[in-house]
Image 1 (tube, rainbow, N blue to C red):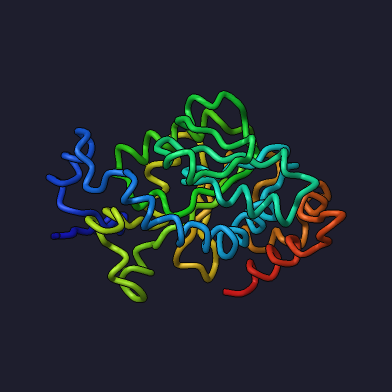
Image 2 (tube, rainbow, N blue to C red; image 1 turned 180 degrees about the vertical axis):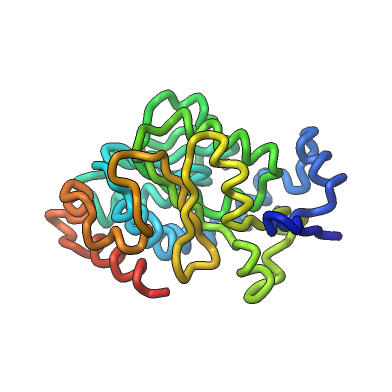
Length: 262
């Protein structure tokens, strides 16, 4: 597969003819039973590991109290199970949405698992994550996601995207671009993400030290400054959200230390 890069925004993308075919409804990789059988083990591993850390970080980065948190493109919804395990007293605040879910037997039983398009959920979220999703999308699909996210946001809403950025692909893992096996057809830079998300009113922030994450945020009264510095001044409500009577401060500590680890 030939890949190309944009000289102005450092966006890496598969052959434009292939992207056009995907936009026309001819995906390279169908999200069928075979796909989910291959994906489920890694989805569970991420959910009870790195994704848990990304969720805790996002809550600490957010400048407004988080009443509803969403995992966009949650797959089988295992991150909801992980959040419920470590924050059982707050499990009702966590949601996951998946447009192409696996069969019911593979999915979480969490009541906030939503089999829907984000645009049809019909409720606002103050915070969330989108993990290993946007690299599957064409620019047109990413623009639709940005529009749906904007419709599900309020001033101050913050969402962390976990994806292999162009620097990561070039210097750490060229094999991340894998159209036929993993369905990865694009690699984004912060500059490229700004071209998509700023049209919907978001500000796009880099995450210092992380070549595989960026943050989008709806401007609010207290949303200035670099995101990593925010962990020390997170709203009291968000620190409390990451603290559980049964599990203690483990999620608060995970988010704080993960933010500082890179």
